[in-house]
Image (cartoon, rainbow, N blue to C red; front, top):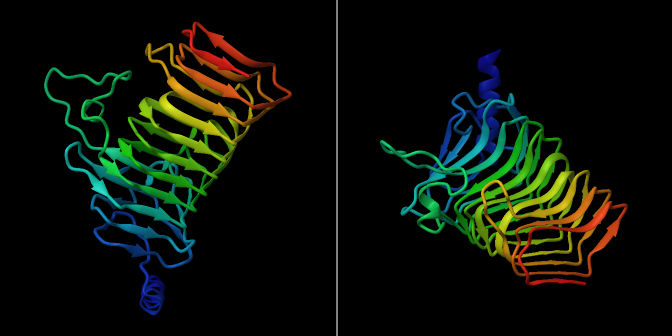
Length: 298
């Protein structure tokens, strides 16, 4: 019976010029998956599908990959000083993985060196730029813990994804620059969108976000506009007192924030413009904790 199933899958792949997914796939060229539903738990926790080559485009053709909440669906890995460019992930349906899509910096921690949560290592000093123009579009991610995690991405796009029912975060960025996060639909998660470790020049527009916290973290030169945020705790919360970091040059414009204890919260945020936002059933619309002067509230 197993042989018949294998032959049937092989025949399907041959007929459609597509690839049947399996755990440990290493993609060195653009690949289209065969439509269907596949149980593909990730045994080594380093990606059922692995990409570490520029120019690879993964088109899942709507295929559903199901994990066991213990691994990652796709891992894109690279090192500082060896940038990868032109990678895209689209039309995938990932369910029940610890992480759906992970752009991961590979780093070596030498003797006497320790990880610093506030400043990170390597790519912060090299000012980002390990993954250039990464595109993650039109995917569905549900179940598991985290949806999309991006480290050291410059000039990327996260657009048109549907993310739901996760135990932790939908989208997280670390040490990233110039990423457009647009027209995503997120529901049933803890922290919806986290900007961490010096993310800057982020453009966050047209998203429908629902979770415990909407947009959180710290960022420089960032534009947040036209989003609809339904949050239990805070709609937007910028500046992290734990690490002593602050946000600066932030524009928050024309967002709708609903059902939150706090609409917009600033912790040590510098220059900012907050204008034309709409609040519905919100406890405190704008809350400022020890923010420097330079704000503009309208």
